[in-house]
Length: 61
Picture (cartoon, rainbow, N blue to C red):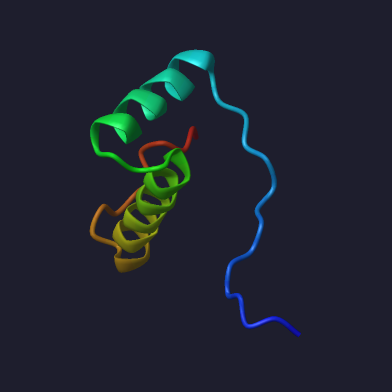
């Protein structure tokens, strides 16, 4: 068994414009796109798990 604590997630499809934005931002921060995505997911979950935003405004009702 490996001690690596990383896991693969299923592929995520995004529009080309978002992919380009991610690439530009990651480059401007001298980071990999995967790092930016991990940080964004972590921040999103922290906000939503804490309930600081209340209702998820991204969710369509």
